[in-house]
Each structure stands twice: as structure tokens, then as C-alpha cells.
Length: 303
Image (cartoon, rainbow, N blue to C red; front, side, top):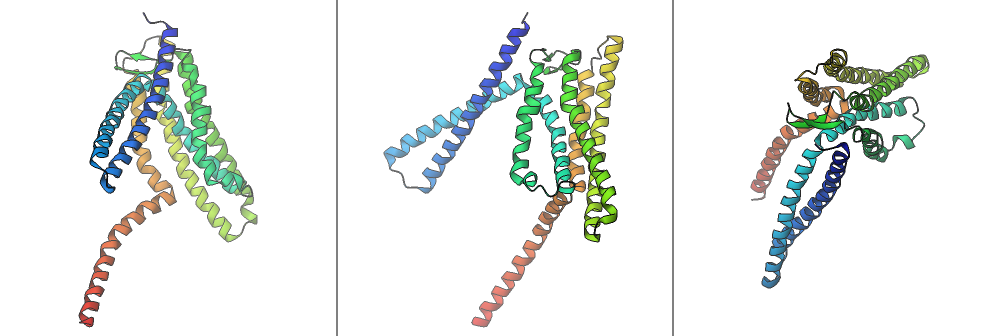
């Protein structure tokens, strides 16, 4: 029987090994591509070329081996990573709400509207908010192998562990998002009578976008209800449903498929990017045809 300390040590070893393997993958991939570029575009003496080719084989082998070891490490800590990424999904929606709060309510503060801030902010949350807070799963032995499902995941029968996941990755960001959008809505309604027509139109667009995003976030909250229902049934009856993990993960798959489509219709900038790509693909052949016709006419006139 493997005790809790051994499981904790194994998790730490897998995490450190994953870091080294990813580093090896990056370095070997970069060096291998540099070698291929050098051999293809530069003249290399025959003796040097053989040495470089042998080094390329070594780096390619390191890349493949490190990638396989990374995959093994990831599978060992996959249950923890899934909880972390679930939390990041909700915290990314929080970042979106925070940006709208700054842009609408505290628009005088330009420092909080910096692009660099919103590039770095998800990584800060990943390290501080999600990873550190969810590290409580390690001493609680929260992530275990589920024999009925053949993968590792936070066990739903460990109530302290699963509640820590729910609060950190689920309830906390949702409550913050709700509070921010309520505050923005109240601010816009209070300012409506003293704003110009242009500002009112912009605020109306903001309200429409916020309603759509709130609908999406509310659906994410609803999709967590089946898992919470089964967990509460376990707490009350003491009997674990054999499909507990499958029932909990199914809404996540539905939300991933739905979000990938819904965001295209809710975010105007994203929708315009996709539509512009379509227009570019249609307009470009026409422009090329027109240019070709003009060039042909120019050649005929010259002759």
C-alpha cells in the first residue's frame, strides 16, 4: 500500500521532471531547427557537415525522448492539471470582466488598461491564485487514480479536497465576475442622464456584450450543477455513483464546444477578425485577376 507521503513525493518528482523535460524539448527543438536551416541555406564543408548532421540526430532523439517523458509526467499529474485549467477558464472570464470595469468605470486609470498587464495577468493567476491555492490537494491526497474510469482526477469522495477545488476554481471567480458586472451595470444606469449621445451608444453596446457574456458564464455555472448534485447525494446517502466522474466531466466537454462557438458571436472584435479573414480570401483572387488583366493590357499597348 502506497502511503500519502509517497504519493506526495511522487507528485513532486513528476512535476520537477516535467519542467526539465519541457526545457529539454524547447532547447533541442530550437537547436535542431537552427541546424536544419544552417545546412539548407549555408555552404558547409563536408567534414563539418557530417559532424553537424550527427548532432542533429542527437538533438532530434532528445526532442522525441523528452516529449515522450513529458507525456508520461503529464499523465501522472493530469488530474491536478485539469483542476488548474478549469480554474483558469473561469479566471479568464474574470480578467475580461475586470478590463471592462476599468474601461467603463475607472477609465481615467490608463495604467490598468495596458496591454502588457492583460498579457501577464493570466500567468500571475495561474501561479498565485490557481496553482498555489490548489496545492492543498497534495496534502489532502485529493488527486487519486479512479479504478472505474482508468485516469487520475480529484476524488469526489474526498469532501475537503473537492470543496477546495469548487471554491477556488468555480465559486470564487464566478462571484467576482457577478459582482463586477453588477457594479458596471449600476454605474451605467446612474450615469445615463448626464452622458453624450456617443457615450450612451458605446455604453449600450457594452451592456449588450455584458449580457451575452453573463449568459455564457451563467451557463458555465449551470453545467456544474449535475456534479454538485451527485456529490451532495453521496454526502447524504454515503453511496458513490460509479459514473460520478463521467457525469462531472461531461458538462465540461459541452461547455468547451459551446464556448468555442458562442464567443465568436458575443465578442465583436473577435467576430470582425473572423469575418475579415473570409472577406480577404474572397477579395484576394479578384484583385489578382484584375492586376493580371491590367498587366496584360499594358504589355499589349507597349507592343
